[in-house]
Image 1 (cartoon, rainbow, N blue to C red):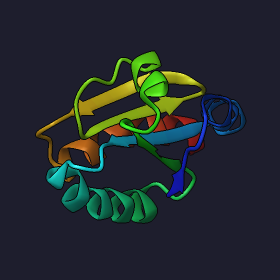
Image 2: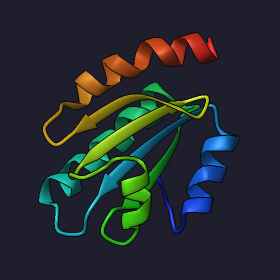
Image 3: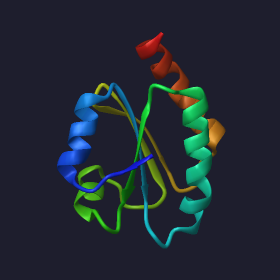
Image 4: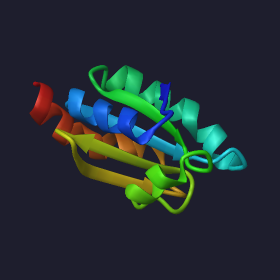
Length: 109
């Protein structure tokens, strides 16, 4: 999972990849640190063509605000540069996986 350093870098990744999962977190979010490896594992196994990026909302508050992210953790999934799925705070990895399956299979299969 690539850590985003700037808004232009984030915009470039969205433009260059058909499927992007953005994981927004903060340094102090304990739930975020537990959930992140589970999300990475799920995406790596089930959706190998999806690009994963990590955004530290406390270090890039403008990027978080631009994406209407005001809580952590928040996962935003983009297909063809458009937000398709958004999950915040309490959500399960299986729930996220099942929501990604349909748009992912339409795009890549």
